[in-house]
Amino acid sequence: MVDQSPLTTAQKLAQLAASPEERTLAEQALRLGDYEVDLAFDTALRDARLHPPALSPEAKESQERLQKAEKLLLADQDDAKRLAEQVAKASESKRESLEADLVQAEADMELDQDEVDDAKEDLIRAGGDLADRIQALKKEHEEVGHGTPSALPSGPAPAEKVGLIHRAEQWTALHQQKLQLWAAKSQAEATAARLSEKHKALDAQIETAKEIQPELAHHSKKNKSAAAPMRVSAANKSRDDFQALLAKTQQLSADQKTLAGYDKRIETINQLAGVYGQWIELVSTHQRDVIHRALLGVVIILGIALGGILLSSWTDSLVNRLSVDRRQLQSLHTVARVALQFMGLLLVLLVIFGPPGQLGTFLGLAGAGLTVALKDFIVGFLGWFVLMGKNGIRLGDWVEINGVTGEVVQIGPFHTVLFETGNWTDSGHPTGRRVTFTNSYAIEGHYFNFSTTGQWLWDELQIVLPIGQDPYPVIDAIQKKVSEATRESGQQAEKEWKGSTTSREMSGFSAEPAISVKPVVGGIEIAVRYITRANERYALRSKLNQAAVELLGGKAGESPA
Image 1 (cartoon, rainbow, N blue to C red):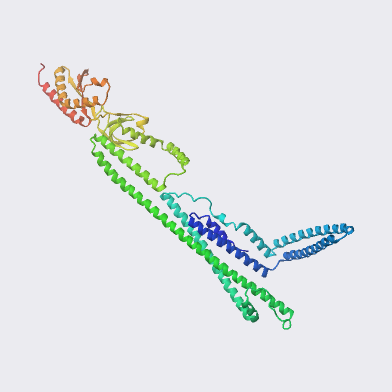
Image 2: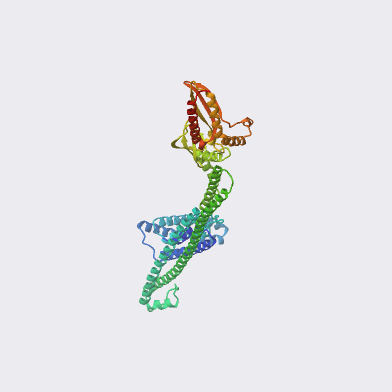
């Protein structure tokens, strides 16, 4: 019956007001929306009284019952008033009888009042008495709707969240708010246009009525809001003409009031649309500010990336100036690079997601879940730090991990890669396979490193002398050849091994070649063990084998001493 959407829309949009400027505009929208609804109720109430709708049979029956009840109530009220006056003036002998009649009249009056109330309810339920229904709605609106300031959000504005993710959320929320404001503004403009059409039609109707009734028009120009009947000479007009003229005058006065009400409503709605337009501009300003801050975050990320590249180059040049072993230098490069990448990633995540707020419980649960799910990766990452330590392994080391031997070709934060070779007691030729291990073996398992600072290892030369040949000259000659070939490397290996440990057992260690002799089937086996570098052992073994062949060939042509 009455359009209350201007107020309900303003109340809904008021919940979105965050900044003080938005709250000021929301208060204006609430005030204008409330005033527009009040004007709409007045217009609807006036129209319902002047143009009551046709009643249904049930409503007509209820109306007749209401009229009868009202007449009885009025009569009982008159009786009660009359009896009350008589009681006040009556003598003592008649007062008792009059008081009994007064009590009965008051009881009848209460009964009639109940009948009137029941008839009114039946009439409203049957669709009649539109004015009373509108009046009830207006009363409800005045009790509830006028508390519009309570529609504004209370308390301080929530703290602004930083981070590109939150910027995107803020922009989306502002965009949705702008769409709602555009819809409210369009609705207000449509309402203003509809009221303007009604105003135009009613104005034309009033002008037509004035043209038809010149006398009425003349009276209306003198006082548009006049509701009193025109003074017409009883000699010139009959009573029916007078009543018709009075009705037309009252109708014209009501139409003039309705027209003035339309003017107020159109002005109010236009002001409300203007407030929504200002609010839209304010939200657009907030959106531009959010976009500016988001672009600033992107620039910060690019700055972090550029700074990380420059810092990585500077760190590499600084590490290269250190006088350390090549393998340690490579480890330092790896550690520095990973540390910079980790710090850069952390800073980028802070720019994207912002600093953590009330996320302690969530992060704790997420951390526990990730710890269980990524246990192997976490242990492998910690094992990488163990391998980077003093007793770890380096690129180029010859190691044995889980029964697999080979040369270390890659050490990453999570995996170690070996280039597999044969057993150390065998020829040691590469098999051509790359074997990858998770670094967790450094913590949960064990590994063997056959390389020292210079990658020294023991190698062995075996010679079999035939039966009947004196082995001692050959032993002396071979020992002399091996000692000459390994003297320098043996001394250096002995020095490095002694320097790498403080054990007393190593204090008597000697890197001199050791010879063992044992009889075998068909002759005597001579085994010479000596120290050599891992990457030189094949060349040294070939050299010693060639010397042994030459020695045995020379001895074969000579007679025993």
